[in-house]
View (cartoon, rainbow, N blue to C red):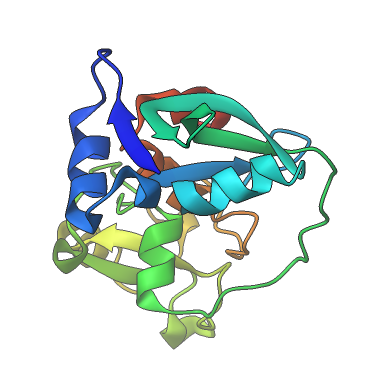
Length: 193
């Protein structure tokens, strides 16, 4: 089998990823449930197998062809499962990394996006006032907002949260899909921004 690229331009980031693996068969493919909900990312090779088995159908193509003796197939960029698969509700570990991921590296008080090293975690209800280290009480916070808030409750300050902190589960990991989705513009209409 031979791989052939069409004359149509392919997004540079997709080309760079596939070339780093040596072949477009390892380019990332977005997997959608039958309800169009993003549920996974797999290699183009695995996606092609799912399409050939009749388990999934191609929604978007990435511009490469897979040539066999009697057939040429376009490699998928997005596939959709034909039958709905129930995804079990699983929680993620409470960690600094996951809190920052949930809050998209954004200070939840001033809305500034910073690198992970420039953010702290803030207890909405301070530990000195009985606050616990839970999903609902921890938020990403820049150093200056954390100093201003100190050990005060929100009602004692003029500060407000951007959004109510919630537990981060695998369904919420669409944040991860959003970040990865920036690598292929064809994925954007399937991801919830």
